[in-house]
Amino acid sequence: MKSVAQLAHEILGRSQQRASTGPQQLKPETTEWYREFLGFDTFDEPELEDMLTAVSVFLNAFRRHDHRARYWLTLLGPCGIGKTHMAKAVFKTHRATSSKSQRYTRWIDALNYMRDGHHDYPSELAREHLLVIDDVGAEHGSEYGTQKLLEVLEKRMGKWTFITSNLCMETFAEMDNRIASRLIRDHNTVLEVKCKDYALR
Ligand SMILES: Nc1ncnc2c1ncn2[C@@H]1O[C@H](COP(=O)(O)OP(=O)(O)OP(=O)(O)O)[C@@H](O)[C@H]1O
Ligand SMILES: [Mg+2]
Image (cartoon, rainbow, N blue to C red; front, side):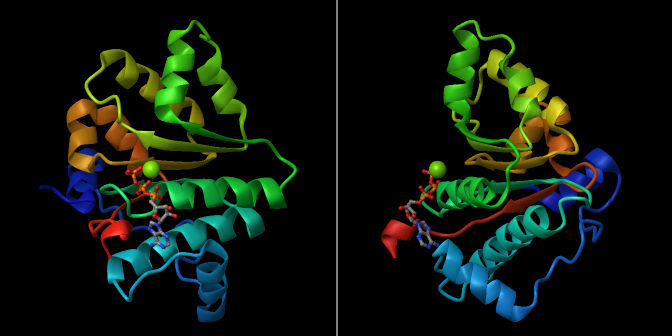
């Protein structure tokens, strides 16, 4: 399976490693503060430590550096690794610390709402200062779903967006290369986490 970095190289012709969204590492005491705040166990596993760091940097960025380049963080990985746990924490943190608009939606709910005739919903989602889209790809295979996802993502470029999915980057690229490209374009970051379900530990 191709890695995010390989796909970034193929799609964009360059590496996904960029340091343009500000400090990618926080001070150790700040990371410890976020570890406690997020209630996230990492079991000393490097992949879970990376997930904690990526989410902490994202939270820190919109809390303290809102004027800097706004970007997306996409967490990809199997069931039960804490993606929704992080998605809800991102939403609640923004709601508690910012007066600007925010929304949390499961992608399947957003799609059903659009299917019910709410054709302006992509524009509504585009207006939010922070948008959390949980579980993208649960509807994998639907042409309507792919088209709507592309429409929403297109409108979200340059805005704080947190995405989670069970799909891997390669599947996104097969679904629609334009979606995969946007996930890693500009300052947007993708983290693929492969570890076991929290419930199995
Ligand atoms: N690293 C972790 N530390 C603390 N709690 C965790 C961790 N990972 C998962 N959990 C807990 O395990 C449960 C399942 O996690 P969650 O729903 O976030 O998984 P998920 O990655 O979204 O799975 P799915 O792909 O099925 O939606 C939740 O109660 C969550 O709080
Ligand atoms: Mg989930």
